[in-house]
Image 1 (tube, rainbow, N blue to C red):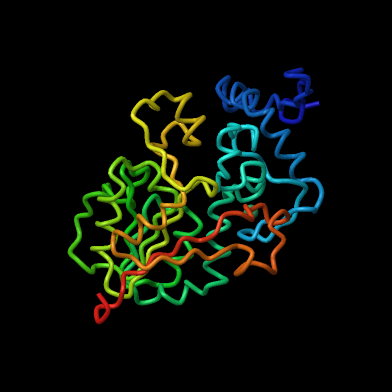
Image 2 (cartoon, rainbow, N blue to C red; image 1 turned 90 degrees about the horizontal axis):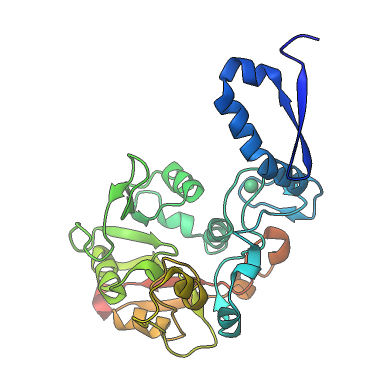
Length: 294
Ligand SMILES: [Zn+2]
């Protein structure tokens, strides 16, 4: 047996992990540590890939199950469940092949069903907190201008931008995508006002955000400030409120015409459980009224 193909079996967290001595000799102890650290996740991915009961619309592969977000739906507090919390699918979050998350998959499905892609070619697109696969598909459609923006950019292609102070002239964009951003923004009315301003009349904004379908009013309480409380009442440590059904009135009050496209209406031909998306999460589409009606 040569060094390159000899192996070492190590027991870790109840599993036997096979490590190649070649890795250790050629990449050093850091590689060995990483392999040990990653072993439980790699085992979960291998299990997720077996079977064919679920499907990813992004990479078109079938497999046994998606990887959960955190601890899956158990992550959600009883308070949020009883409030009718509408968000992504925590149990069926990440594709075990292409790693795309459920909320991005759902957006791709809505873009297909509503043919939002036809608004991209030759248009000006502003994409906040840009999802990688959606970004790739948008850019492939040759928009006239594409701006990826984030408060804290994680790559050099993304512009640092605060949604409450967008450094662009009025009417600069035909399409704005702001997916699961507003729940993080302290001055959400200012953000909505800015999003409306930078859209041209007739332009549309995708404004996905979690909300509580069984609560009429938004809950935003300064006393809710610790990570634990924000997780319990707002759904995540860095959320600053729990929108109620008044979310839609709030978007309208900013000057938009709002449409809530239900999954059961526009994506009825899909099995939400198989595709790993939330049946409850519709698409929030906000249109800046055309100039002759504003
Ligand atoms: Zn995939």
